Image 1 (cartoon, rainbow, N blue to C red):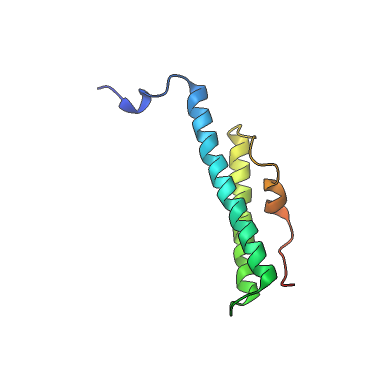
Image 2: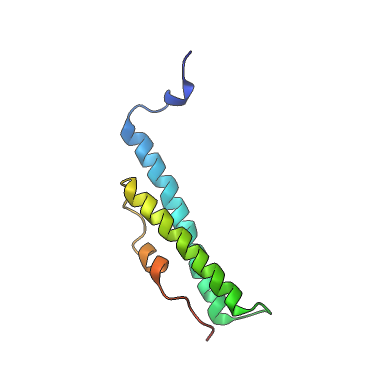
Length: 95
């Protein structure tokens, strides 16, 4: 039978671009989440223990580093320039 899954892939480079766009979107989401979480930790609003936010910040960094390493191994290196900075920055503390 005909494999329709391959019908749209004219060449490998198309599917590569597609995969890269997907992982770039995930990297963007991860960085945006870290920026938001960083703000929440510094502002320290609400009754949430800052350590909870800090733990989540570190988990998000671990996830971002995985995404960046996956992107590199896929040859997708045009992700946003501040991504590694956010992946490795020290966990913020409340102001």
